[in-house]
Amino acid sequence: MSQARRILHFIDSSGLYGAEKVVLALSQEMKKSPVYEPVVGCIVHGTKENVALYHAAREEGIEARKILIRRRLFPWDLARLPGMLKRERISVIHSHGYKPSVFGFVLSHLTGIPVMATCHLWYKNQRRPLKYRVMTGLEMFFYRFFKQMVAVSEPIREQLVAGGVAGGKIAVIPNGICREWLSGGERPERVRLRGDRRFVILNVARLTAQKAQHRIVEAAEILKGWGRRIRFLLVGEGEARSGLETAIREKQLQEEVKLIGFHPEAAAMMASAHLFVLPSMDEGLPISMLEAMGSRLPVVATPVGEIPKLVKHGRTGLLVARDDAADLAGKIGWAMDHPAAMEKIADEAFALVSRQYTSEAMFRAYAAIYANFMRKEENR
Image 1: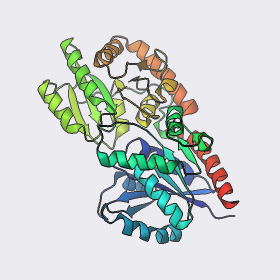
Image 2: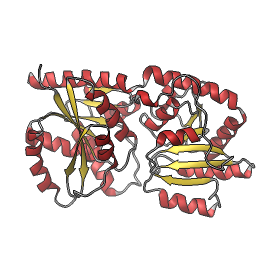
Image 3: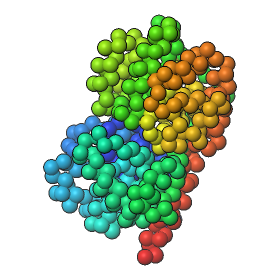
Image 4: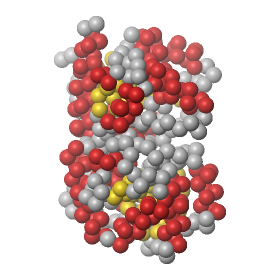
């Protein structure tokens, strides 16, 4: 039997968020295949850096590596990596994110190992730091020379094409979640938080302007003014945390909005909530929303990115106007007043995710891309 092709999932990870969960789910499916062998390669700036994805992969029995690329010494570190990649018998560098894509392009030219990329999100924001805008500009420039690209949604594909990437080399592969996330049989009982009789609303995402958690804080203020007993749990970390803490304190919402930080037991958090909200300004195909649907947790989200394909208003979730705290509060209030309708909506969402958004379906699509991509490279 021919030797399995080793695929390096190259990523710069700051927590277990959407892209990281895609890498884990895809790697878990690859492990079941005799054809492909996953290696999770996490960029680190120091050998002692603690990387949640690295540890999560190893706990799942997935081969993982810390790849040292220091900020000021990156030319030296990049020059050392070709030997490591060849010793590890890497067949394809599969980058996830702007920094791995830029570095992966360079490493491909140094080693001859073909590189492809998945674009999980393309969010333009001129307020982001100059360094970020420079790196994403380089990312889009290099993408024009990649021979294979994957977008997780059609809107991201359109943004890549608008940026100069040839549409013929971009495949759209929706994200998928592992079967373990899909609650089977009877509807799971919602586990109340200890001593908490409030309506619990969950948001799982990086704390960033793009995810718009500031609108959640504003919605909480409106709902409190209406006399609603609610509690928002914001799970995640990010650069917006300080501003959110200030807003929560100034609006005296310490009991209504809790910043949980990173929480490794997302399934338990889903079980403790009554509603999931995602008021993002832009999205690809959010894994946390798929996980909520797979947990039969009703969803309220903005119609951005691929979300409108999943959330059909009144059927598989509720859609809320982008950048509109009042509408968000109104939709949450409606959900609180119509529990039976929300249960039906959650069941429809669960059925949709179970049919179309599993890690098995995602892997089958990627396996076809890998095979075609490597065949073309070998026939050059």
